Amino acid sequence: MITINKIIEAADKILPYAIKTPVLTSTRINKICGCNIFFKCENMQKTGAFKFRGALNAVSSLSGDVLKYGVVTHSSGNHAQALSLAAKLFGTTAYIVMPENAPKVKINAVKEYGGNIVFCVPILEARETSSAKVIDETGAEFIHPYNDYRIITGQATCAYEFLNQLGKEPDMIVAPVGGGGLLSGTALSAKELSPKIKVFGAEPDMADDAFRSFKAGYIIPQTNPLTIADGLLTSLGDKTFEIIKEKVDDIILCGEDNIYSAMRMIYENLKIVVEPSGAVGLAAIINNPDIFYGKNAGVIISGGNIDISEFIWK
Amino acid sequence: MITINKIIEAADKILPYAIKTPVLTSTRINKICGCNIFFKCENMQKTGAFKFRGALNAVSSLSGDVLKYGVVTHSSGNHAQALSLAAKLFGTTAYIVMPENAPKVKINAVKEYGGNIVFCVPILEARETSSAKVIDETGAEFIHPYNDYRIITGQATCAYEFLNQLGKEPDMIVAPVGGGGLLSGTALSAKELSPKIKVFGAEPDMADDAFRSFKAGYIIPQTNPLTIADGLLTSLGDKTFEIIKEKVDDIILCGEDNIYSAMRMIYENLKIVVEPSGAVGLAAIINNPDIFYGKNAGVIISGGNIDISEFIWK
Figure (cartoon, chains in turn cyan, brown):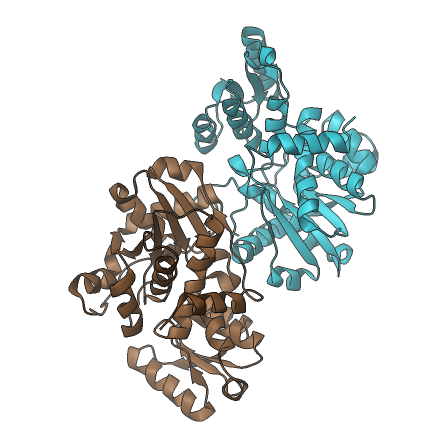
């Protein structure tokens, strides 16, 4: 069980390496949305996303005997970069299983953080078999991108830090949901600190597996997601879903247009760089104004890894 | 004379309205540039630029008798937005003289902050005559965008705040130079706090009037500037130049390519939105690596007002 003490312990362990990311506000966004929003800017976290918290917590929890064989994961996204840097900081190797057609910018980012890329054919099963092969050959420890209590505990430090920075209790806190690592961690921290804080997951209409799973009470995997929020394409895991079912108040949706609007609002008013997935919290507020009207809402901006020069605004 | 006490007084006066903007660093930028850079993020200032400091200091220094007639300036840039908001906060009217062909995004920004736009034909003399006409008709107080000691004192609060945030003394501080309000203010604060801190102005090759003026010892006006850094097109004023001549150590240049590189580095690593002029400090470091090698450098990111969806990356 992930207790508040374990989260505090993780926060202390992470602090020397991670950035205590700023909380920003915008008078203009508040005026447009009809509520007071506090943005926790994990786009400014090391490696450009909250994922560094989980990866760091997982790697730092390994004993020297385990560490010497390295760590392995399958990811072409922010977890890959996060694990690469966490491994480097702890003097070990990160093996990153990636589809051979992954975008060059993502491949380069992993290399830059010192990750050791293992390419696989771009089908779902290949990443599992390739990961298993790496474990066989190297003895490396597998660190799942989200369905892992060490990861969830690390991600929980974000909301813990956020709520401490705020000083006063917000009415609600909103986190984007893909695999559920950030959302389950957020719910754990928020409900431990105050059961009165409502916790919402935010998800694109075009990848609404968490929404449907939450309503159904069992995991419905995502098939063929078409959203621009490419960090939220994954399905929930059993570990993250158990926590989400118990602790999250609701999952709210947003359209693709809302994501573009939210990104633009964030760029123009907060003056920070956000990736589409990172704007989904605000996008869900834009799409559900009645829930937030007149309230104080904390929103986690999950990441800022975007090739801005290639991005097509709509 | 602008003393350190006047700057401290201005900083205290501004504080309730302005943002104490964050100082950011990036391991990767430091590695690329071969020095330790501390970025003062005035792109995150109210109205998106340091200009708010000067405008607020100027407006707040006016007596009620003067304030009731309003304030006037000619600007289509960040000073226009800054003065509009400062005037609104002090319950008075800002008359903003702008060429009738000003970009719509700039017109709208001024309107949003409550500025009262007075259009003029797009030639240099028209803005002077239009300003004079507004003063005649309304009795409003003219607030020049930079050649005004109240403005310079306000801009000086940026470096004052920055150096206090840093705790330790940097080897140098770099500020972009257009009309010279920020650079002269920066030099005043830095040299008052420690004469050992070198102060550099950063300027595009394609608008190098400050560089040439500094070398010549007299003001050489800018003609036909072609840089993408559209906040730095103006020439120095006599008041800013007097301070720059006395207190600034050197003015260093950068190419247009350096500005694009610097913008990209800032977007990708600091994850913040910068306008071209705001990236000129870093661009000048990229173009002059020998000066900065192994040093601790403070760099002011002056503003972040850019229509990112229209911006063409090169």
